[in-house]
Length: 122
Image (tube, rainbow, N blue to C red; front, side):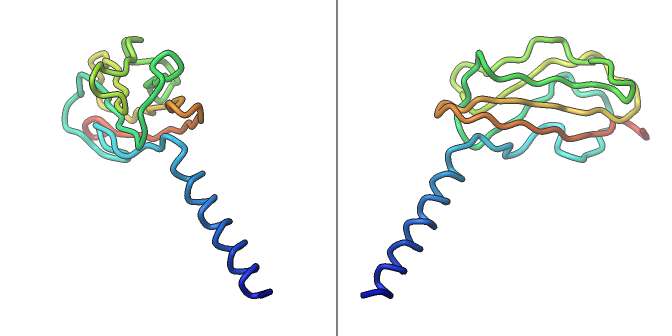
């Protein structure tokens, strides 16, 4: 009986951990890709997440090596693609850029992070 109770508790803990892990919008992939090098300046940075986002509480910025914003300030979650976040970019000269995001998933969990990409020889 004791083994049964221990197994039941352990199984519940694993299930709870799995449900908690699914309850956040994690970055799935991006364009430009995380850590990538692109030949020319992309017109838009697009991030895809593992869950739908709350548009009013989700943001993304792109900065250059000096910390200056190079995005157009028009971050949006496109209608019909609730797990996608995009922002327009100014023409980018060769260099390394940082994409920083903070999103709220529809289940009210917030996640944030950043990654870099390089344009040209950087």
